[in-house]
Image (cartoon, rainbow, N blue to C red; front, side):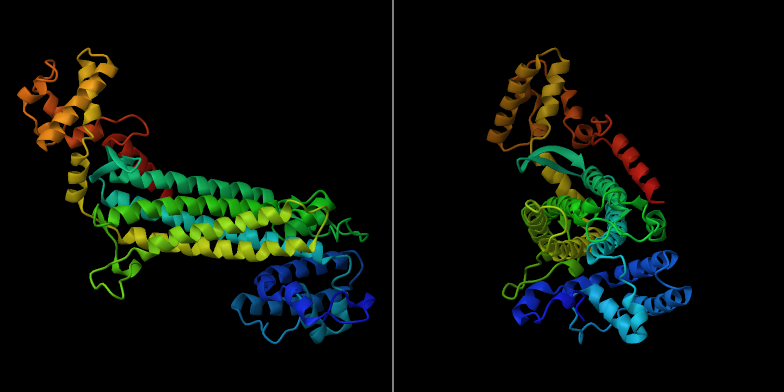
Length: 457
């Protein structure tokens, strides 16, 4: 059933229908479209368009459709309808006849789809917040179970300074907390109702848009009808939030892929999130992590596509905006999948604490601590830095760690070095001396971890 055929003498071509019809993907908005239609039936009933009996007939039929939509039993396959709006209306007309033809009075597909998509987005924002909280919980769990593990920290992929494993975990917790914050922010902005704005100029029927907004769980109605039907900022914001969060997950995946490599060997991943090689029996590949990293570009593409689509559109609605759905639906799906698999990956991690500690010691990370030791003896930092670099060269030539050099060897480079230097060159000392807020010492890490555990309860 066409919602616009009266002015046309000929039907649409098959090729036009292929490019124009959106039911194959906007069927995802079925529940939201039906809920919006229930609310609209109440509004136009109060406006005198429907009798109470007609409104009740429509609401009962719509509620029955809603049950099917929410249980996945709506049959779309045999439908030749253009979009979800015409599908719902045609289904109602088949059941109720002319009463159903009154439902669209005063409403446009423009405010209808804007309402549907905001409802869908709001629901999925809430689901994604829960997904992100689960990833945080997994990171806090593995951090709690491995509080004493120390591994190398890196800059430029070079061993830099040792850090506690929970400190590494909590770095990603901070990223995911920002992702959650972005979702809360965009949820507040999107939670306005376009319903009642019509095609672009509002409606002549005396409906109460505040009541409509409240009935659908919106905070308020949109205040400008032109903006309401053409605004897709909420789509862009969610795509940006998805892209940022996927970037965070891609970075985490990259770290874990390296930690899991034969060259590092800091962690082992569970069989349930890895795969093997069809040729090499010894291989255990971190495919879940690599797919998380790979899907990042796919989500970025959806954001870029939507930005390009919107950049040249005049007010108000244009059919270009039908391109808003497939990209967001896919991006949200991929983000959700990656968040779920991230939990499984993190929960499967087993650390090799000895290998981690050995690598942390081998990187001459205590060279900075030696420089600080010399500063405490009264040497200017730049001079201390040079002396410490000479000590590293001497250790490299002798194929030793700094702490393995004898006192005599150290004194050849600075007479101020005494036996007390060995205490400050130990791995645990290097880490735990950094006890400032935000540092990797056991005290700030324990406090930060305790705060996150408390948030999870």
